[in-house]
Image (cartoon, rainbow, N blue to C red; front, side, top):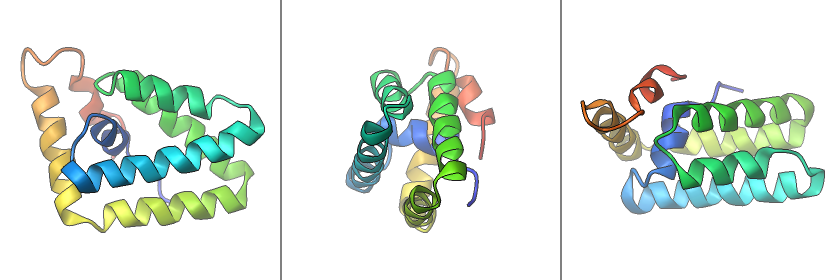
Length: 121
């Protein structure tokens, strides 16, 4: 499984990509909530935290770490997450929208979001 981009997660949580981004975020949220509700671990909390503040690079990194750790422990979840990730990576318009969102976050005066760009790709 490829590493999950924190920029992608933050961008999707922040509304990047319009309808396609919303569909991708909804699909990820459904997957995470289904999987982590059963296990009672921190995945759902990390997802909700990023939804509340998508510009916080630490929240994006936390969700990435939780998802990757779970994927290493659960082959079925890893396969589902990989399918989701391949779908988002294959959408050039979505990738461009997320890149534009990340660039906007790095602009001076945009708050504590500059670190998002450097935390995973």
